[in-house]
Image 1 (cartoon, one colour):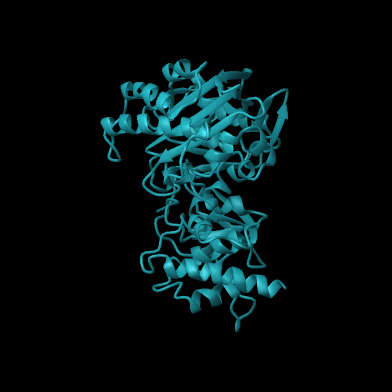
Image 2: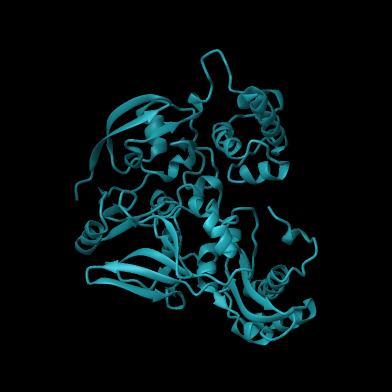
Length: 164
Length: 293
C-alpha cells in the first residue's frame, strides 16, 4: 500500500489562509502545531478526553486531535492565538482568566478559552453549574477549577458590558 | 500518537460511498470521528482505507412524518440537542443528549456513528431501544430496515453487513403529553454511563396505559425490562409499586469490567429503574439524581 497518501488542503487559521500538502492521516492538531507552528494548541491525551487541543471549527468547538487535517479543508479554524483582538490587547475572557487565577501552569488554558468562547456565545448569562458542565470536557490539574469557574462568570459580565 | 497509514476517500454521494465500501478491502467509515479517531490514534483499528461520510449529500437532517421522527445518520448530536422538534416530540432523546460526552464532542459526533459504534452504555443506543426505533441501511443490493431490537449483534457490533451503511434512524413518537426520564450513573459528567435507565410512560386518568423501561450498560446491549413494563400497565403510578416491581431487574445478566462488578451493575439496574420511573411519573423528590444539569 502507498504509505504516504497526501492531499493539498486550504485551511483558514485565525483569518490567514494556508495551503499545504499534508499526509491524509495527520490530525488537525498536528497540522496546526507542526505544519503551521502554532503551538498554542496543546496536546494532552490525543484521544479526546482532556480537551487541551480544543479549537473552534467554523465557530464550533471541536477536539483537534479527533479530526483529520484534510477534514478542515475549506473551513475556518480559530486557535488560542486568534482570540485576542491584537498583539497588545487581551480578549475580556483572557483578562478574566488573568484576574481570577484561572490558570497556573497554563497547559489546559487554550482548550478552556476556546471552549468558553463558544459557550459564552451560546449562553451569555450562565449559572455557575452551567459553567461547570461546559468545562466538564476539559481537564485541569492545577486550579481545582475554582478560579476557572470564577473567571468564566466574570468574563460573561465583562463581555456583556462590552456589548452594551 | 498518530493514526496508522491509510488511504482517504471522501465520496459526495451515498451511491459512491456504498460503491467504495463494497469494493475496498479493510475499509472503515468515518462519521463524526469521536470514537473512530481515538481508536485510530491508539491503533486499536488499522484500516487500509478510511471512507469519510462528512461530505455525502443528504445524510443529515431531522423531520417528522406521520408520527415518526426521521433522523439522518450524519446528523450531529448538537443539532439534535438544539432541535425544538426533538425537544417537543422526543423528550427522552433530548434528556439523554445532555449526558452524551461534552459540547466539543457533540459538535462533531453523529447519531449514526454512535449507534454503529454501539457502546453498551451509550445513551443514544439506550434511547433507540426504549423507543423501538428502526434503522435504515443502504448496501449494494438496495436499502432495508432493521428493528432496533435486532440491531445489536454483540459487543460493539451492529447487525449490518460489511458493505452496508446506516443512513437514517426512525423513532416512532409517543403521543403528546407522555412522560419521559433518562438518568444514569457515571463517574464523571460526560463519561459513558456505568448503568443508565430510560423510562417512557403514558398516564391517562391516573393509570399507566403504556410503559417502556430500558436499562443500558448492564449487558452488551441495552435491555428492555418487559416484566416491569407489563406489571405497571393498568396500575396507578406510586413509588411503592415501582420499588416492588423493579426488583426484577436484579436478575438481568450483567457484565463485569474494571468499572463495576456484575452484582453492582444489577444493583444499579434496580435503583435506576425505580428512579427513572419515579422521575417520569413526577414522583421524584429533589434528590441530586433528579436535578437538571
